[in-house]
Amino acid sequence: MNVYETKTMREYLEGNTYPGRGIVLGLTPDGRKSVAAYFIMGRSVNSRNRIFVQEPDGIRTEAFDPSKLVDPSLIIYHPVRSFGRGLIVTNGDQTDTIRDFLEKGLPMEQALRTREFEPDGPNWTPRISGLLSPDGSYKLSILKAADAAGSACARYTYEYPGVAGVGHFLHTYVSDGNPIPTFQGEPERVTMVDDIAAFTQEIWNNLDEDNKISLYVRYTNLETRAVEERLINKNC
Image (tube, rainbow, N blue to C red; front, side, top):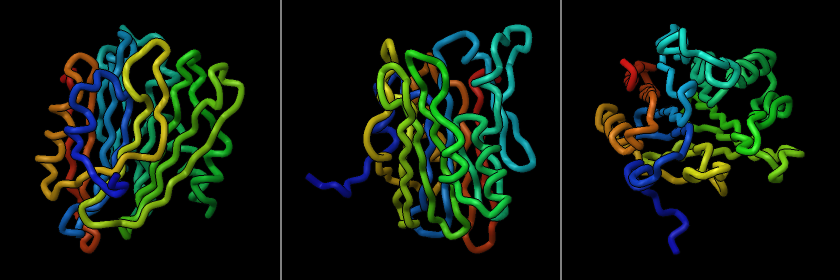
């Protein structure tokens, strides 16, 4: 068994109808650019009624058709925000919690001790978060229910150096189900790609056609800080 094996995003996504929301952080094979990607999926009408909208410091979610918006509490948020030369990526409004703590000089882990998984039992959707540093190193965190009743929160944080050609993929669910099974284990090791267009298409083309909603990908040159971005909305 090779514990350091990496797989492509196609291998992780192809045939999986519902990995939920997902974060990928890593470093390109040439070692020159950090990578951040975030996608959302949905099964309900309310969840599918979303798009990503560009903001000066990242992106936010927005209702595609405001007349169909039922409950904005868990679906409208800023998943990506710049902080200094770093980047925060999450699947909920904990983006702002992390930013507020960082502004006070406090770590992401401390910020997330004030939060827990989403109150959507029996699924208890995990809160997943990432923090990408200017040198290409990064952290990934998941807050998930400690039991089927959602009686307590289990908290896990993983810290990685920037390794050329390697990234990590963290998503909310193992696959579709009822209730939907929560992600298990460590973030998955991903084979990264130098070309942002190719990486964007690899992710988007292998997300389930019925359930995929939006994708954002960002490459940042570690030396010049130049940023390349791609954004895809199914509803546009």
